[in-house]
Length: 321
Length: 280
Image 1: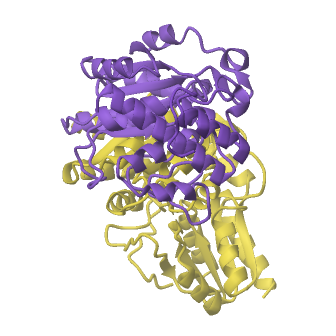
Image 2 (image 1 turned 180 degrees about the vertical axis):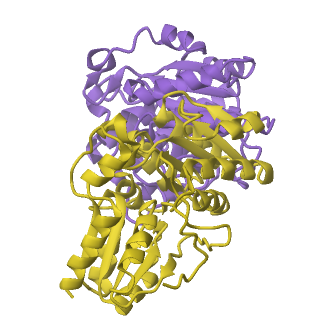
């Protein structure tokens, strides 16, 4: 297996992506005086505490009021600031979707919506707190950019990149520690998928922590199949070219995401393939159900989001070629 | 402008509102007519704005939260020179910059996008907070409807403004007592609205929304309040200026037919029969 970009497959190193987000914010605090951070009573768990300590005048505690947070952020952005609004993804952009739609996206307010604790892996809190629809409800919004970084290092890069990008944006990440496989040298360009492996039999297109599992699946299948892996960190604008090239090269696609397959990464890739280059597709993700309480690993297993599930999807899709 | 000039200007603006609503064939009548005097006072007497430089960084911002009364905003902006009055006739038409509900990117002078109720006060708070961060002197005005106070987000924003002492923010509530389904106190009682805002840390004023001396006095008073946001309860008559529309909630969300408009324009242009109209 030959990685096309710098990758570390030492999965013993695990860091929560939100830590990368917190570091990214502190970098921005030093370099960009317009960056303002708002939180909905979740300073510690969304990792904005350090920013708040270092730049108290640019930190705004909103209380548990996500709708107002989105609106205040829009007002700040329309006055030249670059606000990052942080909460759990179920609340923002969940609870405040209308405000995100009208006050932020339609108005082209330069607000960065940060959805933490996304996905099933938030665990014991149960279905109410497991955001499995947030990619779908943000990517349908005109003017919105949607980013799902693969690990903590990429989350830091994405945070910094979004501050430079002018326009409404959504970034989502999970709560738990996840494998760190990108390095400081791994390229990250908004809107451009990162091809990590080229494959002639199948390409796995993944986002978030599922990228690590996709790489593990490719490793396990090495020798039997030629498996490509694409880190589709930017769900919108989607990298159509990369998806079509992968479909042409490998003739079969598997998608993997910690989100509903309808409307999420799998849905987005299916749209591109169906319109431009139809090939067999299998989607790994949540299949039209709510989650439940449990340990993250129990839930990932039960809802079909492990390396093994990706391997099985690869085997299914190969048979359909 | 002095009070007399403002009154004359308001009558012209009301007539243009009637004309544009007839032409549009849909939209809201009562709110725009009821708030015409307040908007006229704001745009011709209070706001620091420059139609030549709509993006001037130091301008005052007017956030219209109840977007459905945009005919009054559009008309006042046109009279103030932000765009040509002829364009008012394009309201709600395909390709028009005068969208059915206002869009910040569509037309010069529009600060925010609104339509879904309850979102404006939050945006106004964000702007006021930004001005304080930059130690800028510009002020933010936010016009809300009374029915809009049903929305929970309004009270989230009211708490926020109180917490952060946004003294550079003046909210104005169009207290016309009607909303789509009837009288506000039947649909969802708001009273005691003064005490509610006081409890949220606001300075509260009440004014007669059709008395220019009172309107200008209150808006100036609000500027002088330190360490607190101010809300002005503007008592207005929905449909003001047109006898058959006044105080009738059925006119909240509909426009006059051409016969009705003729009658309305006659009333406005003759100041209810007191003078002769030059148009008739």
